[in-house]
Image (cartoon, rainbow, N blue to C red):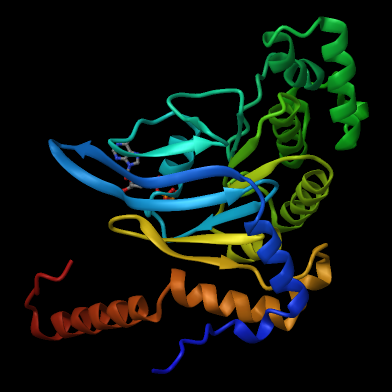
Length: 303
Ligand SMILES: Nc1ncnc2c1ncn2[C@@H]1O[C@H](COP(=O)(O)OP(=O)(O)OP(=O)(O)O)[C@@H](O)[C@H]1O
């Protein structure tokens, strides 16, 4: 029998294979087992996530991609404990998720800072809430603020910050509470390409320096390849795992990484999975039907 060779096999150098294998030997940080999720819509049950199995390992950087509506955000909300599921289980380390908890930090696309609080107060918030004294929380907040270069803005309010600065604050606010896992749902989607790249660099730098597992949802395949150790690829209707792909790129990632042949090969591979060419064929079929309609004045029931 012919052995299936992965289309990216040639890009996995011994060093990359070794690194990827070592990640999979680390303790489990997040375990999703046989997860199913349905929503009710107009009295009908919609099966959004179907039998999801996935494990992220300690200090792993996982990106999740997939077509619109495949359930990426729902999955992040389930891990955050903001939604409930009918079947299956989610564990952080060995702890079953049954609601929100301090072991998970979240950063969303919309800047979820408290607008009436300064940068420093936003970062201090979770710390004082969990019982830390005001002085210690302030000292801790300053360390985080320094880390992302916002010392001069410690007393600024969110409306005085750029989009990138707000997201830096959102990230350190989440990290200051020392979660085990950072859930990020399209955190940089609202930024222009230059600021987006800057934020990606910041995030990699922070991640390399602290003990955190990142579960990062994105539409942007370049972003996923640049950031991730592994990419979880979901397909839609119902959302389920299509593939988990170890990224065949060395670390540390640099800007040149984005121009390397292995980067382009990975992108081409992902494009085919996430935006399969059949969609274009379908669209072309539909367009030719429309052209036919305009000639024959008959409306076929295709839409
Ligand atoms: N609260 C809800 N009630 C009913 N249906 C919902 C609810 N939340 C999400 N859905 C449906 O679940 C499906 C998955 O939505 P979700 O937002 O998780 O997908 P996604 O992959 O993140 O999409 P996108 O990439 O467009 O953000 C969609 O069909 C959506 O309409």
